[in-house]
Image 1: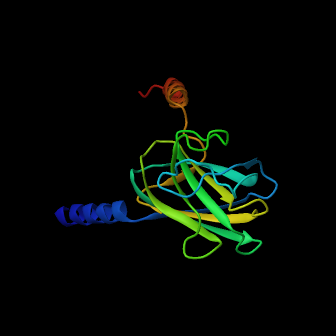
Image 2: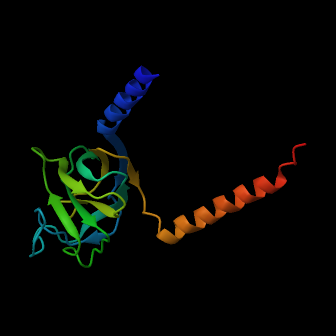
Length: 184
């Protein structure tokens, strides 16, 4: 019994240190346009003089565990189009490109690869923005995110949503208990 407990504790410890990785894809082709900032941590004014009217796409995400996450975006079609990436916390507005921006990167060693490592907080909403270096730099992309916890793409549910889910679960439990026949 004691050996089994130690084995389970060791397995849980290893699982908690294992990295989670998720890959998604999308495109900026035909997407909305904006004037992007210049790379930085965080980017600071002025806006880019070359990145005016550049297509972009926004991917909302949140993580299940606080820690350091690695973002690697690869431009796929056309091959190695000149991608550029940013990460925003809480909200993103293309009309206010310096509001809530955490980090931005142009190229990771070569054109067509863009990314960074950033500390993220569990339950906080983030927005990964994929864009191009200049007008005409647009296309399909693939994003891989690796970190200590689950990476969920989409919006963080509002607290009211959790409350409604809890009420629904309680109602189902209550209905199930009422249907059970009495035992003799």
